[in-house]
Image (cartoon, rainbow, N blue to C red; front, side, top):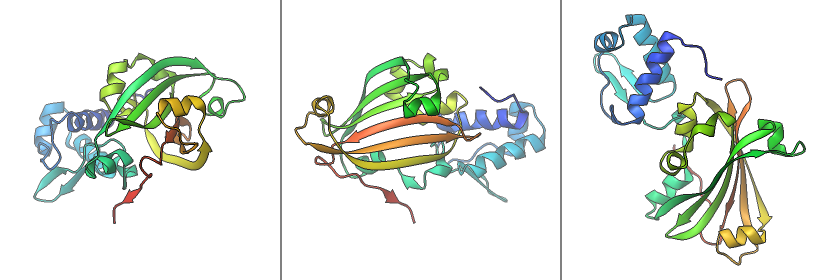
Length: 233
């Protein structure tokens, strides 16, 4: 459910959207407070609270006498002190591509761990990542049914967390668990491998009220490339 409209939140959301779509690129300055007041027809305090919120998310930085600088265009930047694995692969010179295999609304079994997180129904997105044109990661994402209106093309082109952010789904933390698993014949076929084992990652994304807003399972063919986590100092 979308939160009720609060003026400074609305202003922050619009500025955030403008940052994400490139209107205010990383490294650029936001308009001055006075310019933002006129742009949104709001008070100075509303603008300041909006900027404080964006600053708390580490999307912008305000410095006295210098203005407000855009630091990042990544949703949930505050949660992203560790670089994403796909960013690591791209930075390492790997050619990474993704393809949506299937998008559907599913009914979950009551004894399923996903049912316990999302309820009886969910949107399921099956995605394949390739590494230098070879199948590497097979994802199954389970998302709230509020995401049912998102077309396949958006899942192909946009970040999942940016799409969730656009639907008013805010995340305060991720819970990741890893285990080595024996690949099923279907997983071997999807990943085009004869390897017997792979790495399984289960992610639960937690919303503002402590509810699970994403349950995803990823299978990595680590024989092709190891899983790496790169942390910033």
